[in-house]
Image (tube, rainbow, N blue to C red; front, side, top):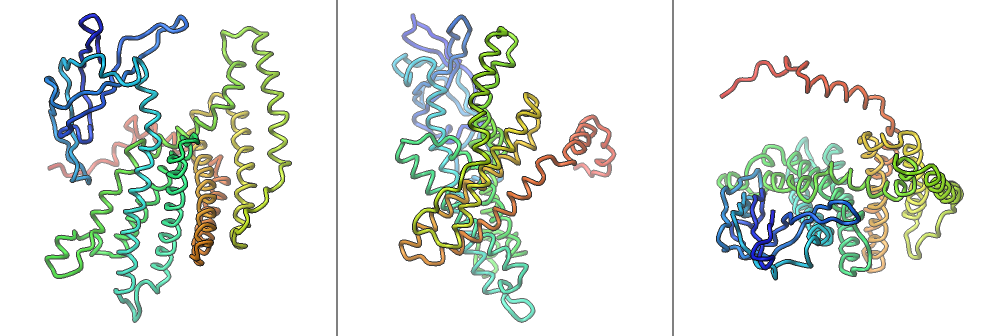
Amino acid sequence: TAEPVDGGSHYVINGEKLWCTNGPVADLLVVMARTPDRTIGGKRRKQITAFIVEGKTPGIETTHRCDFMGLKGIQNGLTKFTNVKVPRENIIWGLGRGLKLALVTLNTGRLTLPAGCVGGAKRCLQIARTWANEREQWGQAIGKHEAISSKLAWMTSHLFAMEAVTWLTSGWADKGEVDIRIEAAMAKLFCSEVAWKIADETVQIRGGRGYETADSLRARGETPAPAERILRELRINRIIEGTSEVMHLFLAREVLDPHLQLAFPMLQKDKTTQQKIQAGLQAGGFYALWYPGLYLAGAAPSPQGLPKKLKKHVTYIEESSRRLARALFHRMAWYQQALEKRQLVLFRLVDIGTDLFVMAATCSRAQMLLAQGQDNAADLADLFCRYARQRIEQSFASLENSTDHKSRKASEALLEGHYAWLEEGIVHS
């Protein structure tokens, strides 16, 4: 909280911030605090305001230094503010505009994670490729065995896709002309999930040497490949800047919002019958043109210079995008307001949309690299698109999964203690 004092010339900040990255050593902080509510349009509105605060201001202390599974190189802790006094001039943008400031900076900040994931995945691929060539089993390098070669192919094609979607969204961010809320969230979701799997497969390919620390390997005279450390470090990316679950829900909400703006007035109790009829007519007029287009729209021409093997994927993206829109609309009509509770259905729809977006980015990057003489980029793009299409078709097929209801019941039983017998036998230290 930040309360005005001295006639409004200063504010006094009180509260705590957990997991304040660099907080213990920062010389300068941007603090988001709740300032007194304002009445806008007859309703009380919460106000979040951003303040510039010097790190050595009296009243700021780090009460705990956090220790994590990874991220051993950062300063992160619990920062406490006790009667921290700052001048009004330290407000950024103005009273109540802190939340907007945070959201504006969130997109580009969120893109740092895909970039970091790409870097980590590149190192993993290097480690896995080297070991798959060196290690021999049954008379040949393990990379020649199908069980390992399939992992390497998946890792290689998905690293190419990660890099494609990271460069595309970062380019849009640099231009500053495009609203990339959805694209940045998709890039973060996709890259953090894929990087984790690539790191996990790297440890698996190296076996015991993957699980052993680099220091231990070095002490034994072996190449100190830090596979287990990379695994620990990359795990955080599925959590920070929005967990994968939050990213799914955020993307679902962003996609649903335009439809809800049309339909919501018809469901509001405080609307008159005339207002509801008017909203219904407006929505009906929109969907009368929009919905048939999801079936009738013709395929867009393939971009010039696109390799033949990728043209079929571009067509698939076009057709599946309309199919996805239909699937979303049908479930909105069926579940109505209850759709927000069907999170697994929404997650599958988001996964489809994310894979389609990454497919488009991958084909685009392959086309660019081909023009620069990188002939085999199209092969990787083709392989990734094949993997993505398998996932998409599986998600479409399982939109209404019969196990969803049973899994929910099992979870409720667990939370109520009905499966507590499964926890018997634990040896407590």
